[in-house]
Amino acid sequence: MTDLHPMPGQEPIIRFEGEGVRILSSDLAVELCTFLEFPQQLTLREQEYFCGALLHRRMIDEELLASEYAQLIPASDVPVDMIPDQKIFKLMRAEHAEAMLTHGYVRLGSIDHYRKFEDKEVGDPSEGNCVLSAFDGMRTVIAEVRAGLNDLLFCTSLGDADPEVMKKLGYDTAVEIVDVPAFSAAIARTIQSKASSYSSCKYVRDRAIFGDATSRIERQHFMNGQIAEMLGDARAFLKPQAYAHQKEYRFKWTLSKLETEYLDIECPQLKDFIRLVSS
Image 1 (cartoon, rainbow, N blue to C red):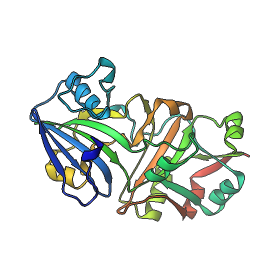
Image 2 (cartoon, rainbow, N blue to C red):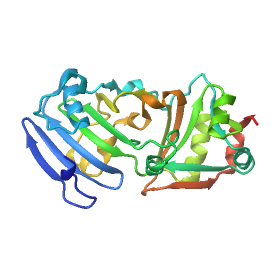
Image 3 (cartoon, rainbow, N blue to C red):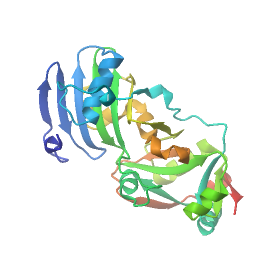
Image 4 (tube, rainbow, N blue to C red):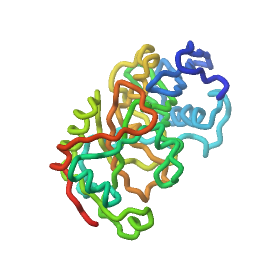
């Protein structure tokens, strides 16, 4: 169905398929969105089927193998804005750690930046992709999105810095974040973020979640990109199981403009919320 995907600024494509309505559109925050709307609450098995159809680029009246049904997890299983018991640290080169500790220099990466990154340990070509199924009390909406294109990320790890892993990745230093909310808020002020969140990542077979919508879903929400957040920020913290060894803890800040690469910032307040772990 890739031939049906419009470009930003074009009129959306609307298709009626059985009881569902499929709408394809694109804007600055959501690169691609396939939208299915049903006038009732679907069973979990029905949601797995329709989400699987989107994941495998099938029409929704096609038969799916059992293995092609989506493995859905509840959006509530993603611990957004929760602080773990484990340490949160960033592996770095010594010179970058010194710059961060002394001046608050830090690099934030965009979704597009991580999609294109050649190092497979850092890059993820499916970053930002997700299928969401939400019930708003009256109807079920299922949306396939490539979202967060105006987000900036800072990726850290949970636990303790492994010297062997550090050596393998070419790092010689780890910096611990000792005050997560303050760290996030300081960067949010510096870059004038309109929203921010943080969470440990959930490692899944399919980037697909379901749950109750955070508010009533309107067609206009889809048209202006808000449909990507109909289950909150959970979709931003899903990662393929192949990355589970990274034990990622992620910070996310949303800007009012599109970001395509990375942003280097200076935030002197950060030195109050971090400490050197090893070098």
